[in-house]
Length: 353
Image 1 (cartoon, rainbow, N blue to C red):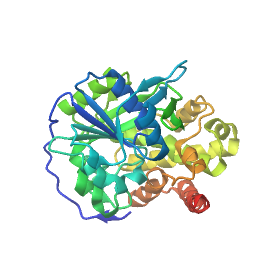
Image 2 (cartoon, rainbow, N blue to C red):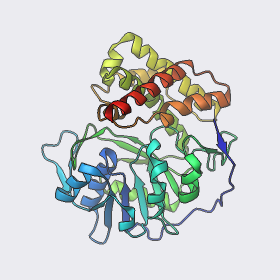
Image 3 (tube, rainbow, N blue to C red):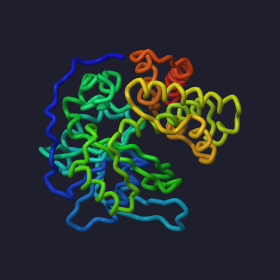
Image 4 (cartoon, rainbow, N blue to C red):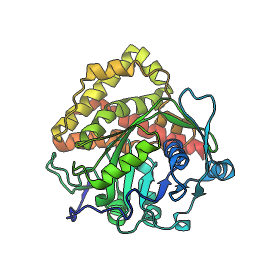
C-alpha cells in the first residue's frame, strides 16, 4: 500500500447550515443514488430543493420525465421530478451532498463535488469496499489519518473535500437502471450511517431522520468500519467472481467450487478486518448461508462489465490484498481473483472502445 504524507485534521465537526438541510444534491444519480433522489424528492416539502448530477442518456431521461422508481413488488412506479444537470457548477452550494458514485469514480469527481461545498456542508458517501477516508479519526487500527493513494489519487478527495465532512454509509440495497431515467429496486433495502469518529452527532441524527422520512430504512452505527468490513465480506467475493463467470449470485452459490471460493475470500476479508481492529460478529458459515437466500441477483460489477464500464476493483478487492500485506495477513485467493479481474477489466474496456 502507498501512503501519502499524513495530514493532521481539526477534529471539530462541521455543523450543517440548516438542520434539517434545505438544499440536497445527489451526486451520481445512477441506480442507487437515483433511487434515493426519487424518494427524497417525493417526500420533502416545497422549501427543500433536491437536485441530481447525472450524465448521458440517463440524465436526458431524468430531465424529460423525472426519475421513475420501481420499488420491490410495486405495481406502478414512483415518479419524482427534480433539477438535473451534469455540471455541478450549475448549482449553488448545498447543505447536504449524497454521493452515489463508486469508489473508482470519486477521484475524478472531486473538483465537481467541491463546487457544491460551503462551510457546514456534510457529505454522505455511499460506498462499497474500503473508502478513501477510512483512517480518518480511526482509533482501531493504529494508522489514524493515513491517506491511501490507490483510493485517492493525488490526494484530491482529502484536499478538495476533506474527510471531516464525511458521514460513512453502508448500503444493502439492490438497484439497477433498467432504462434512461428508470430504476428498479430488487429488495426493501437498509442503509447504515456513521461518523468516522464513532460519535452520534446532531448532523448524523438530522440526516438519518431526513432519510427515514423519505421511507428509507436507516440505522446509526458507532462502529461504521465494522459495518464496512461486514458488507465487504460479500462484495469482495461475489462482485469479482460474478464478473469472471457472468454468473448470478444464485449460480455462484449453486456451484460447490465457486461457493467454496466465496468462503475463502470471506475468511481472508474477516482476518484483515480483525488485524485492523474491526469486529465482524457473523461467522463465514453464517454469511454463506445468508448468501444462499439472496437468489438470482446480478451484482453491480457484473452490471458494469456487461455495460462496458470500468470495474470497481480497487476498493473491493485490491485494498483487501494491500491491507493484508500491511497487517501480515495472507490473502492468496483474493490476490488470484485480483489478477484475473484486473485483466478482465482491461480487455473489456478495450472491447468497448
